[in-house]
Amino acid sequence: MTDDILVKTRDLCFKRGERVIFDGVDIDIRRGSVTGIMGPSGTGKTTLLRLIGGQLFPDQGTVHVDGENVHELNHGQLYQLRQRMGMLFQNGALLTDLNVYDNVAFPLREHTNLSESLIHKLVLMKLEAVGLRGARDLMPTELSGGMARRVALARAIALDPMMIMYDEPFTGQDPISMGVLVRLIRLLNDALGLTSIIVSHDIQETLSIADEIYLLSGGKVVARGSTDELNASKSEWAQQFLKGQPDGPVPFHYSAVDYADDLLNGHPGRAQSRV
Amino acid sequence: MLNLLQEMGKRGLGVFERLGRGCILFYNIIMGLHTLIPRFGLVVYQVYSVGVLSLIIIVVSGLFVGMVLGLQGYNTLVDFGAEESLGIVVALALVRELGPVVTALLFAGRAGSALTAEIGLMKATEQLSAMEMMAIDPIRRVMAPRFLAGFIAMPLLAAIFSAVGVIGGYFVAVGLVGVDEGAFWSQMQDAVDLYDDIYNGVIKSVVFGVVVTWIAIFEGSDAIPTSEGVSRATTRTVVHSALAVLGLDFVLTALMFGEI
Image 1: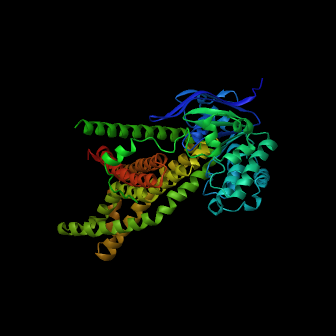
Image 2: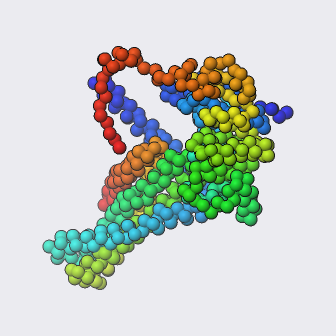
Image 3: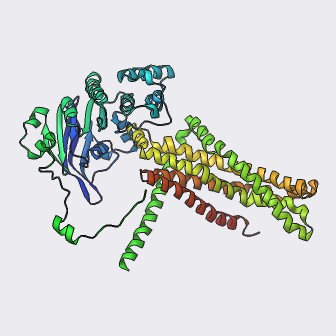
């Protein structure tokens, strides 16, 4: 029986040094859906993707992808599973010594024994899907940030994965590139029957395409639901985040000692210039 | 005082932790070498990158080292009327010691630093992470070919260094200070032993090649993924390689020639 849930985390706990990143996070990601994971910077959104991809180990709890416990797989099994996962890194992470064409062909050449003529056709199809067939001969350094992400997207779908994880896909994009990416993510998800996980703090863009959204803060899921459910949410935290208010449950000030006390009794810092 | 002890203990543990990570990486690279058999082209390209591109510095340095050996050797030997043994001095010094050691030091500076910077930057720009997520093991795809290339290139470079050094010594001995050409070559041929001298020199250069390439790859993969982190890792590669090469040279020399 195929489970409707593709990715399932239960009681996920993760620490970096003394800092608690996740403290019992439960997330269900349905097959075929676009799920947004949102939260302020530093809430461990990217860490969550790395936990799902098996690049990091949780201190406690489990991550199941397609019914398999990611952290109990051996090296070979994990790599088998990853062939069915795509990931789009924030900066694209294209291989800088290969051109656009070879970057997209890279996973095909590594994992299949297809002939070069077939790989050629597949690469052109993937590049056409992201609108960059004409840029096949460019090197990564010649691409704009948005184009690099689209090439990385073409590379991520090269092996026809079952899911794609997007790490901050909209950050630092001009409105046109942003619009293109938003449309592409939804389009590819529906056309290829993918499951998409978008980690982002760009509220409008994510809300516009996500079927379900999880809001993370302080290592926990503070709200979940569809766009409408979140907009109607009574959670003060969710409202502060969605409306972008500077102060609220998430304080404007980083925790510090008393202001007056700090001014009167604090030690002056030493001048430091290391650059 | 307690803080000092604590700090020393922490650093000591840090050193062992890094050594442990380095050994695990070494093991994983060795276990990944068999995957290179069907795709030897990757190794060939890396041999070009770390070997062929290092040729100029190796050849020029070898020539000058040989010439200096010729001059210095002559100055000493002439006092004893033994200047015709100059060929032996030049050849033995190069084949046994200077060939492997100086080549390894130059190799660390030229190819080792480049390997560290390349792998460190691949880590900083998430290229290694992206490969992992594409189910391509960076240890097998990126590090193993570079390691094997260093293993292959280093002895060849050391051999070229020694050969060019001998030619440099010949120019000085025969061309400049007038040592008899026949005596120069025949004494050299007579005194240099294939097993004791040449093979031991080759063993040294293989060991140095493995160690320098291992340090370079480890420092790159262990670099803190920032510009400062990569620059520090590159420096560490050169410093640690130089120390390792010189230390190991003593150990190997003691093992090989200690009884002579």
